[in-house]
Length: 135
View 1: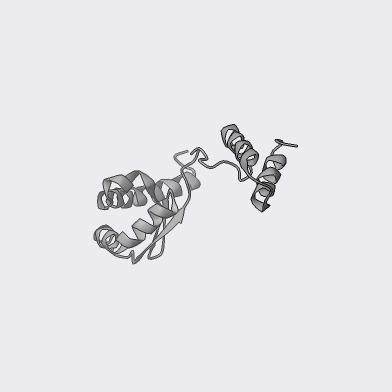
View 2: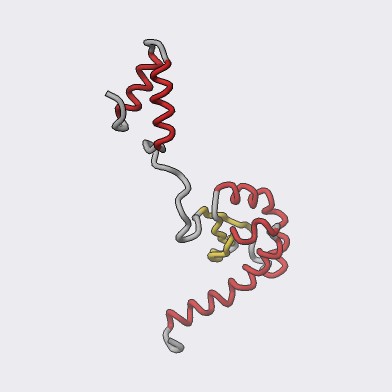
């Protein structure tokens, strides 16, 4: 591995990015430190991967301060670009769009039983029917 040019290039890149990552971490509020990772330098642009749009928005507001701190280490950096990519292996928090828990379907059945004939009752019954409940 030591003589392989690919690994040599990667090692040089990591050696250059490690101090930038450390400087970024020191400039970030503690709550955001685990949500941002330097992924590269493209000319004057520092590329940072963040875990969510909310983190990206907060860091965009902090960009002038971040830049000042990073430019002490790398004066050529003039912009920071944030890319949203959740951490690998992070669990999905959202249910599928059509999936409803059984307790919700039970509540819809109770609601349908109390509604008079109406557009709302028809809609609730269709929802239940689409999910295998009701007539």
